[in-house]
Image (cartoon, rainbow, N blue to C red; front, side):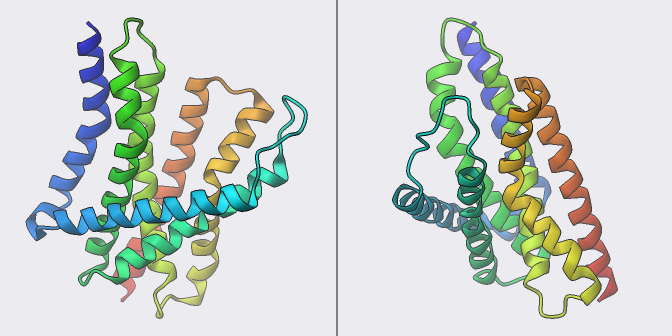
Length: 225
């Protein structure tokens, strides 16, 4: 039974990535190693972020239960490095915008999935006691895939030299939401005392809204050129 639960969690987490890779046309471009390079860039960026946070943002030593608003906001600001990393990956790949976006997003999201979900699944999901948190973790990995595709699309639009002036404000707002989404989610959970399933639902809705806005701007920009 534990092996069956482990298989369900892994399938729910990893199969959407495989389906996205196959159905997006990346397999036809032989983009596997490009995605691997994007994943390697993700690891390098995360290492730099960890070193920066450990150096300049020590552990919060305030009262228990008190939310360190300023400290968490500053830590979230470090996620700007993800935008630079995605831009670096896309700038090193030649091709259409859709291809660049999907290569960067798939490599980035898959690297995060492997580094943050693989060991918890192997250690926890095979445990004797059933726990819903691993199912939630699987759903969260799918939300992360959508998030990184939207983030890569927004970064691609923001760095275009021919981006219309009317697009700059909404694209900048979407960039800010992509960077500070995790901070906003932690703030919502702390203020409204959200449960785990409710927080996951709010995260899915927020990510869906950002993704739909990004898709609308992307389609409008591509068809206008």
